[in-house]
Length: 339
Image (tube, rainbow, N blue to C red; front, side):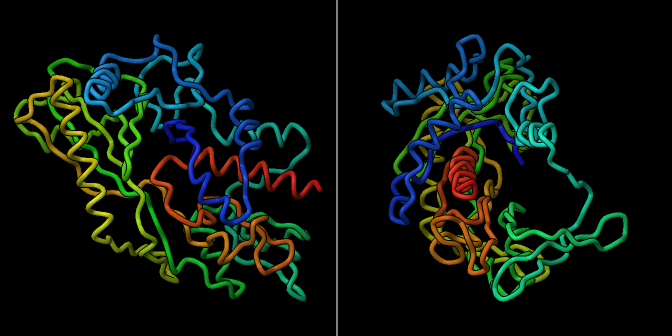
């Protein structure tokens, strides 16, 4: 959800999408201007982030400021981006929902999708339960955006066997001690290193202090997120459980990134004897209803009028924050639907 994202806005899969007849250049430009994507002003680059940028530069890793949709005039630099911004200083999908409602759209909340209505291979509506009662919303155009897991499960209700493949952009956080760095209260992920098989970004993880032990406190930790692309070796069960299989390449790429993160941390002044890693986690589930397999280049399924527009459709793991790419695909789809 964008509500708990870091508002990172990087372009991803540009060349890969060309193979499917999709060029998002104009859509990227439009969205970046619309939500004001930019690298943060120096006033909002904290001490820990600057150490990351300087150390990575010294090591020849060509760091940049992370493109973000955060608005400095509102941001109080509390480090709480991932918990929902307390002062509404970043772009979220809610902003678009609010605009839609202001222009006459009806927003139905606290409702569970129970099925899709089709007739002669065309979409005719959506079934949902609200307040314990099943209702039907009739429409000749439906866009599913329930996420990689939710969209796949909904598609299965009408016989489209999505969700038998899955990526999730694996990551670990690697960190160590610099006394009183106070990195945990900075704007997170404000820097970026793009490697061949991984990306690195300064990111505080609350799991790190316990991994280090001793008297390490949250205010003493400088840590880096190591994120990679992964192979689509996973699936969603019919009960909605997720199974992910890690390949040799998946693990190798994370190991390469973790090694680079260790060099940056030491160069930044972290005591190397304190460096520790979190467990392996998944950041961005996707690929469960991929372009070229379940949807065409216009994101339409085999059911006429039924579209999917979320990380489900990404054909391969980006290994980077996918929000901007999804927004660009959404702009492209909106233009297509308008005609």
